[in-house]
Length: 252
Ligand SMILES: Nc1ncnc2c1ncn2[C@@H]1O[C@H](COP(=O)(O)OP(=O)(O)OP(=O)(O)O)[C@@H](O)[C@H]1O
Image: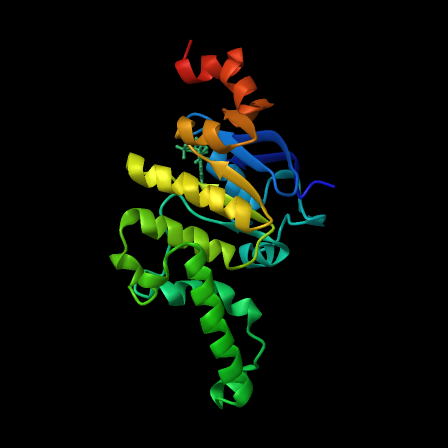
């Protein structure tokens, strides 16, 4: 069984069919890229997979559960986490607190135990603090734990957003143009971070990206979208040589 299965999903915005009969299946641990020219419908696909929009037609299953009509937080609980094209951190919170917010599902104390500061509250909070610091260590960001998110350099803000998504313990991580706005050095570090995630976490990744070097360098399979329709799915090599893909990218 595929981990993610989108079957004939469509998105109609008034007279515009932004996504038309989109099919994609992603296995556990697979790294799949979704590419296409500006306006092809990539972010709309992400928004449907993560519950921001309900598809106007079709079905989406994650880990065997239909997620159509579910709220984004319910889909996070089912096991899909995402990052956004424009970074969405809690900018006035510290790096550690950004991770703690994503980790709260692990906290077991009740509201009353929290208000009264009972022993379970302290035990859970201590455990969470340590787990989140350990988590930052994986990303080599423990030295930034008490830094406000807004004061991080751009590349590190992206990294924190990815780490925060991973702290929700997803089965699939969806990255929406993570290299956008990055300089070559930051893009290189991002590639290393994605490599690290593959080694340390047992998850699938779906990546939207314009940086072809990044997509071709790390994805096992690439789906190409044009005017809302999938025009090709294949290995980086197959995609690079596909005449329809060449036509779309070179405008021939
Ligand atoms: N909420 C919306 N209402 C109306 N039209 C929308 C909406 N969101 C997206 N669109 C349109 O749907 C089409 C697909 O947009 P989408 O943002 O998904 O493309 P994209 O492939 O992610 O583009 P980019 O690479 O530029 O981010 C575009 O024509 C866009 O203008």
